[in-house]
Length: 443
Image 1 (spheres, one colour):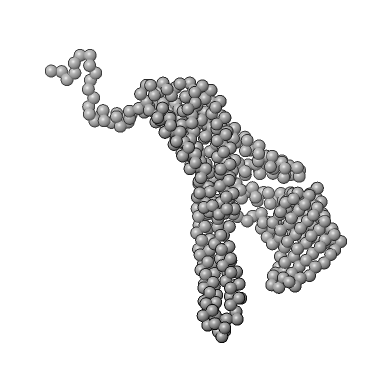
Image 2 (cartoon, helix red, strand yellow):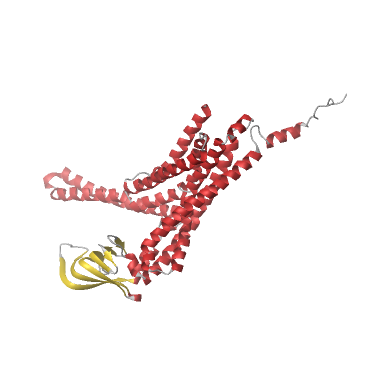
């Protein structure tokens, strides 16, 4: 007897059928996957161009305020823009992923293509997987940009800006600003051309003398290789030693020429911070600072313990003991050392490095986090899905960026843990996306 009746399809071998089932799981279509992936990439490209243009224009306006107004050559301005592009890419990627996903899912939902897909027996995996693929790819590219290209670009930007500053010193002097060099802090009032009003200078000389200079006005001069000079009019100067500040000298003068050596300008501009480092370098610096902090804390604890033991001995010995007369001094020293210990433990520099380390991961992978919100939000779209996608995309971008910047500010000023400060925005959008997905699944 024949294995198959006339008109029946021939039976597949079990191994072939099993392999076919493994390659094409139920409810999944590779054709649909490629179609939605292409649509998502196209929308992402348009969205990325939009945000890229917005951030580039913002950067150009900042440069116009500080540099173009000083008649810096156009070629050097173009190089500054080129070196700032990695930061623009890193900022644009998450928001472009959000808006691109919303536009794609909103259009498919508004045109009933998703409803037709579900009615044909295909699952929502065909929608989630392409969007997640784009989110993962963009996050990885953004991470490489943020971790490698951004530090390199920032270093080149600062090196070029340093050269421009030396040739055009008025760039550094802005109205009502604080300028820091190695051992010098200059506070300026209103600036008009090279004339500065209400100048306040704090500095430290090579022999450990601290000085404060005040002037009603100052004239900025470029002295070439010698550096910058400020001609202070109607000046007042006070100087004191590091030890014994109650002993000080002061003087008045009609004119004082104050020099800022070129070496100090250079050192101030080339100082490398966590932004100019890769995540690996930042992590190593964090470990080194933690070890140094632990050593300083141990030394301070030993000092506090010694003072406390001396105080205890005096109190136990009573009025006849040698330490009894010094008990008030011990109490004051104990309070002072305890406050110093508190300040050491709240090391602002270490907190800054920890925040930057978390930011190097949280900002790039914000693209993937925003996808989790964009997919279910796009599925709720009906007609005019793309119009609403643009509206919600821009709105969520503003809210997300506000949470991100706010978390960074709280981490620096309110001692919020760096992970909480830098990842709250991502965790919040993922949680909101999961809630919307559960609501959509129950309908």
